[in-house]
Length: 204
Length: 109
Image (cartoon, rainbow over the protein chains, first blue to last red):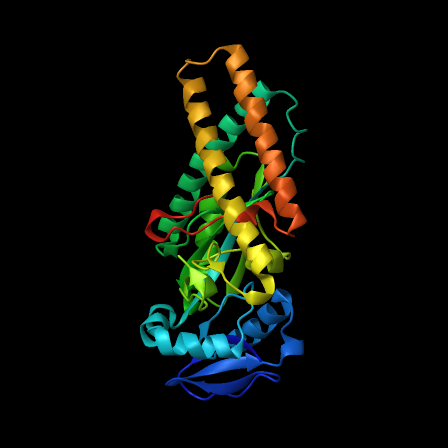
C-alpha cells in the first residue's frame, strides 16, 4: 500500500483511497499499482483535496509505503503539523525564460561570466518572489531551481484562492524584473510543500 | 501591452518538481542504496564545486584574476560540472536531485 497522507477521522469519498489505522490517526492509502508514479499519487491527492477532505498530505514526488507512514505516525507530531496547514492549499509559481536558452558558452571565461549572470538573476528573482509573497501576505517556500525554471510555493487559505491569484496577476503585470520571461501559476494544490513530513530513514 | 503573466495548464510538472522540506532529504532504501549513495556523494561534490564557483566569481568581480586565470578557472569548473552531471545521469539523477537539505542551514544547491 502507498500512503498519501494522514487524517484524524476515518474518511470515505474518493474511489481507490482507503483509510488504514496508523498510530492515533489514519493513513490515506492507495493500492500499490494505483500509486506507482508521482503523477498518479498527485491525481489522488488532488481528488481528496477537491472533496474537501481535511488531511496532511505527503509529497507526491516521494513514494511512501504504509509501513513508513505507520512509523511516521509514531514519531512525528502530526496534530501540530495538520494544525499548521488545515484549511490551506498551495499555489506554485514558476518562472521560465520565454526565449530558448542561449548556446552553451564555449570558453572558460565566457562560462564563468554566464555563471555570474545566473547568480545576479537568482538574486533578483528571489527578491521578486519575496515581493509576490508579501503582496499576497502568505508563507512562501524556499526558491528552488530546475534546469529551465525557478519556482516557489505560496501557502494560502483555501477561500483566498481567487483573491490571491488576482493580486499576483496585478503585481506581476507591474514587475520590472520579469522582462522577457513568463511567470506561471498553478494550483490550488494540497499543501504538501508545507506539511513538513520526512519519511523514516531520511537524513537531515 | 503583453501581460507577462498567464495561468498555466501544464501545472502537473510544476507540482511534481522537487519541493518542500523533503526535496533534499537523503533516504536510505535497501533497494536503491546505490542511487542513494551516489546522490549523497555527488551532492557533496557539486556543493563543493559551487562553493569554488562562487569564490571564482567573487575574485573575478574584485578584479583579482587575470584573463588567463579566469579562463583556467572557468574551464576547470565547467568540466567539473559536466563530469558530475554525467556521473549523476548514470544513476538516473538529474542536477536538481543533487541538492541536499542541511536543515537550518538551507539547501546546498
